[in-house]
Image (cartoon, rainbow, N blue to C red; front, side, top):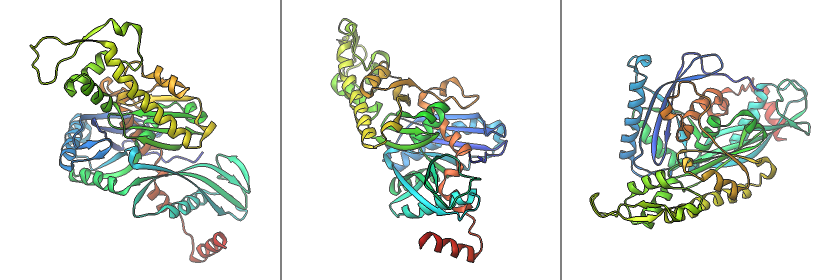
Length: 423
């Protein structure tokens, strides 16, 4: 495989996951030549000014980002020695991203295929999708053909006349990105890289065989459920729906006429995505909206609560299933699903998911970071953890990096190359 250029040992990298229910910041340091991170600082704060992955109030969002970053900086203060953070790698919510499949051909005229030939193909594909309406976020080669021969995973060093590269490209909506960039810049930070949320979650929580054999990661957040398909070691598709755990909470609040914070507590303590016979006999106390704690208890059967949760969660899984079916990926989807994200911790979710999606499901959490405190080692922090892995091991997929490293050669060579490829 392509030699991955890891961040140098001792490098500090910060990841910022801007979600609808919380904002999280991880500061990591590279501890070896393999690009392994140890987490030095962690900050998280309730989200504000963000709804279903979209920034709705710049001031509130900026304030929440500042609090989060300061908490992580304070925890990592000994190592950072007073230097404030300058750059962060940031998640791109899946609702503002779009997957595109492209194929690019380059002539190699019989010589040995080099890294630069691959970059030429990627740069050529990037030029086809340049637009004022969206920003190119990922350019990922997923398969190669040399002189019509399929199934080549690593072309470098091979010989041939013509190389085709199948490329998965992800674009982000320009307006949404500009709003996010404004918030981050107002917090005196620069965005060093962007990564689609579900891609980061997959990098954090999937084992290598899952990425290789075909697996879908579903990241259930507060306001967005995003998902990504991995196959052959790469992400080959990503998408999202603007529904998540907060919508379940809102349904409970409306259905049981209780405050949103009480609805969230009921969901965590007594909620389940699957009904059981015992639910009818178990009574739970639901505080009435607007009444104080000393008022009469309001007991309802637990089955009422489950009856509100189950249809909403079913809807989420059915929408994901429909999007995956429409993707046309077929067998590449694989038989396995990994569920992660804060809202994936609801009891019974795995069983309901297996029933609706007809796939094997396991619950995922970050598995690739050392020194992660227990409080932030759960599924709610998969995206933040994966952002560090992305910036360490996948910098070669960043569009600007590809364009910067294409060696044009002499003017005559470039002219020959252009004539070869266009005539």
